Length: 270
Image (cartoon, rainbow, N blue to C red; front, top):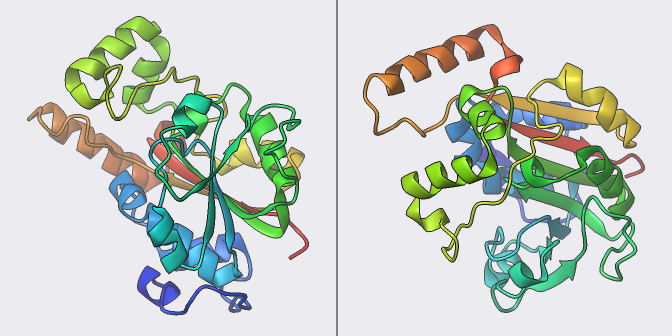
């Protein structure tokens, strides 16, 4: 099932085909490329394909804050009811007009009024889980917040890719200085601020993640590993060495050094 065909039908309750009754089968049908560039370029399309394949309409974007997945107009155009979540009320204050917001900690106790158990068909996040202090608790909460048959997709950077391992090991002040020097937009007050990265459970290995996700309540699980990044694109020589390393790791399936992952799970009962 290519992305184009997955997006050919309007959003609505559908019966998954025999090749995509499970999340594993669905992701296999998308035929992801090994390079993380595919993950970035197809994140929104993957979400829309999930919504169409499994008939998901009520979507919560975890940590969407100032930069949500879709505008209100785009969400309506796709037939989605989008709610933007964030732990930070200040970030939610920057959410574009027309979108509903939900202020709660995805790794908290879900006592906030905005945390509606069973209230979402689809929960998604992009570059959020590396900042979460208790990712296993977050997945357990996601299970509680999803309706029966609901789906969640988390897209995050992984250890132990050398570039992210360095970010993890360095003191936050040094890591912040490097990121600010390379990416001015990520300086304080910019449009894409840097938050401390913890990398709790941020791995690209199904063998490592599946037991934790099962404890959180999921049995329909897919971990899609990716390798490669663009941090060295302006550094000839190092860029080619790094690409060869990642291509080789992808070829043999060395998931200890993935750079990113999609984790996709579905709650039973749909």
